[in-house]
Length: 202
Length: 396
Image 1 (cartoon, rainbow over the protein chains, first blue to last red):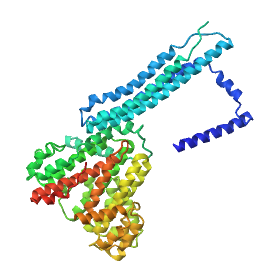
Image 2 (image 1 turned 135 degrees about the vertical axis):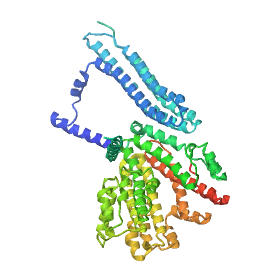
Image 3 (image 1 turned 90 degrees about the vertical axis):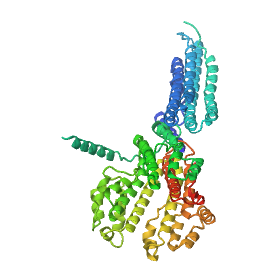
Image 4 (image 1 turned 45 degrees about the horizontal axis):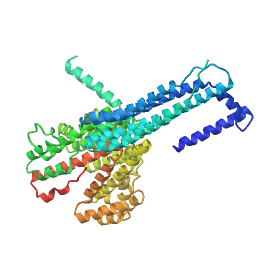
């Protein structure tokens, strides 16, 4: 972990030196950066927000199913009775993907067509675009972490259940807490998407 | 081509490909989030096998048996239920051998499906048995045993395709070097033989050792030397793997090195290795260069010539001091006390997911279970008193 942080610091230092040499100024030219990032269309911000919401949620859910499925397949060889009960772990992982798709549908319903060039309207459009982008990242990264967490616990749950059936419910409680993380993410996501108002117009 | 010749050539091709599969894969093993991709299925399978160990009440039931037929009935409720089917003459060696073969089949089943670092790790575990098998075959040849019975009595885990060629060993001058050049160089344990020969060549009397005609004691020493080289290699490999595996295996392998050192010292008391001169040269070369006892304990072993001085040498180490005291209080041998501690450590290796140490601990605990079964069935066979039975150790 420390290795990653160290390489990240080195990367930023080298980037700073390069921009200093290229730009001639050792402090970042914030107005020029605003021109670069500000010129990206707010529709693109909104669109990638939706993409993150659904894409990263699916990655998290898939990762969780992959972790759990391998353990269930192995543990069920000696203890076939765990097969049906442990599908609950898979369902918890699947629920994470469902959260993602709910949010993606909600978010893509907020888009409204608007081609006007008035600065006031364009500011409104930009605000909505940024909020949708943030909403997408919230839901996406939250569900990604939730999916992995549920998967890791689900694999331990399968192995423990194979050895001793009374352990299943106890470890399932841990898994329920893990899947609550996804719910937190979509609650915040829903609130954020309510704040994304694309103004209607020509 | 006749059907037999076709069979032969097919078997040769399969042996060739099996031999090619001994590839060494290094690098780090993923943690909780990545491990299940490659190794999750096999780990879950291994934990299924872990549930199949004989529990304490089953071992007590075995102790209550009066004949070996009762043992077969008692096995009916455990994982060993089909092992003794169709066996006409039951004896302790027979029963133990069949139980061990079941365990070996399970282990090799796991090994066949393993890939990547897990495959290399499990290969390391089999290499120890391969070294023991090769030395067992050579010792058997020195004693003029029947070759076929030797092949049957080998440990099934440490079998390399073409191991029957070891039977061509002749106890003449250069016999060992010839064997190495023709047969052993193709085995995965060839590097250990090579290192052993290099150290011998650099010794005071080059080539003398290799040109000797061997007797059993010397083969024993060679076996211990090779196992030390294997243990060193295994230790550095597990440290390379990193993560949970490295942490747990460090503890297990360090204890293995210490236990091996103590056992070598105890076994050397009545042999030539105990001479003042050879303590520092030959006996010291058999100790591994890591472990709690290294380096000060190993240094103090040069002054150890009997059990009392061994006790003094182990005084500074808390673990071994308590084990020695326990051995004296309970009236068991120090080797049994070490086995008991080893069982405790290996059981702890199963606490935690996503590491390879469970695979190593599984084999070690199965060894203990083999000792348990052998002791109990021998006591039943010899019809000893109930109090003699208590040498078995509870595993889980």
